[in-house]
Every structure is written in structure tokens, then in C-alpha cells.
Image 1 (cartoon, rainbow, N blue to C red):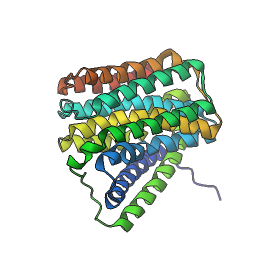
Image 2: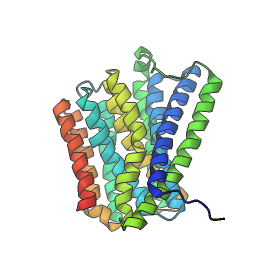
Image 3: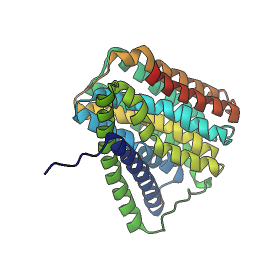
Image 4: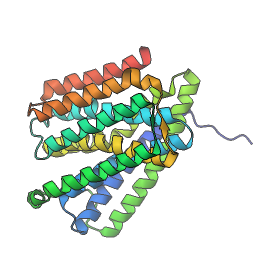
Length: 316
């Protein structure tokens, strides 16, 4: 009896859904656990939320490295960072969240710039060696430690984040574990479907990583940011994007490099896509450092720019 083959587009769609639902489950469960353990809310935002929304990128990167598909791993991170800034942040600014970034945004903007500079160096080097991955993880831990130490005095004044989970530690643990399982399964299905589509239509794997995989793994950031924007929590909306980009570069690629014994980076990333990352992340960070308002018009321009970039990848 022949095994029934699931069409690649269905695999991609189901993978998207699992990544989205799993990311939400992990974030909500982890926040509830943190509050029950009386961890400061600001620390939750810097660590648990950023890590939770970046779990899809981590799952896809590790799965891609294990299947010897480094272009999808690197392309997924580069594309996710572009999507986070242009699509996610742009959408939040369209809703009016770019004019009230809040405390700590300058620090996070600087962190994005430094992480992007480091990533650019590795891209032109053509590889992230295991030692480089360890260095990136050390930088990430140092960044979170510094962020916590410089912000802990302001944490008590912040209101706790709303969560749809009941105030039950057991349910929070179950939600976190179940969300993690869904994320890993979603990553496997998304990667299988994306590579299948690439083979079927002759699409370069780097483009698949920069577009389909990146968009799918950015859905948790989009969900969290939209919720924050709709609640008029500008600092959470903008900070989530910047924190996730730092996590993607230092945490995701650093971990994948250590686990995979290094990551080879295709030369095509140096010729075009890293400059898109520099332009988008650098421009947003510079505007925030200069205390400039990123209003709805600028946000709309960012979203349109992202759609144009996607069209260029497939039609260029």
C-alpha cells in the first residue's frame, strides 16, 4: 500500500499554523510561570518573551542544519529580521505605536546595530565557526544581564502583561511544553514543505529561507506586536521587534553554529541580502536613537517596502 503524500503547500500552511499557535502557547505559559515565581515583569520581556517568539527561528535553523541546509538556516534569520522590522514594526507603527517607544529602546537599538555589524562580518567571512557561535551566545547573555541590571529599578512600576491563561501554574507548564512541541513539529513541516516547493519549482533555497521560512517564523512576533500595539503598549511593540532581532542573530545563529560545528554562509547573502538587513535594521534603529517618531505613514511605507522586497526575490 502506497504511503499518502501530503502536498508541499499544505505542509507549509500547517507548519505556519503550528508555529503561530506554539509560539503563543510558549509565551503565555512562560509569562504566567514567571509571574507565579515573582520574576520582575521587565526581565520577562527581555528574556522569556524574546526567546519564546524566536523559538520558531531556532527550531527551523537547527532542523535545517541537521539536514545540511545551511542556506535555509541563514536565510531564515536574515529574512526574519527584515520581516520583523519592515512588516511587524511597520504594522505596529501603522497602528500608532511608533511614537511611544518607552524606556530602554535606545539600549535595544544600539544592541541591534552591534549585532547586525557582527553578523555582517561573519557573512563576508563566509562562515560562523563554532568559536564564533560561542562568542555570540556570550554576547547575548551579557546583553540580557546588562538590560536587567539597568532596568530592574523600574520594573516594579510596570503593569503585568495580560494573558489568556488562568492563574494556574500546572496549566502554564502544560501550555509551555505543548507550545514547544508544536513549534518543533511546525518547523519540521515548514522546512519539508518549503524545500519541496523549492525542488518542484526550481527556486533557490536561499530565497525560500528569506521569504516563506522567514515569514512563517516571524508570525509569533507579529502576533505579540499587534496585540501590544492594539493595547497602546508602544514600548512592548517596538521593544519586541528589536529584542527578537538581537535574539535571532546572536541566539539562533550562535546556537546553530555551536550545534552544527559551524555554519557556512553562501556568497549570495553578501551580495544583496545582508545589505537589506543593514538598511532596514539600521534605519529603524537610527530613527529610534534620534527620538524620531515612526508614524503611520512611515509604517505603511515599511510594509509596502517589504512586499516589494518579496516581489523582487521571486521576480528578480
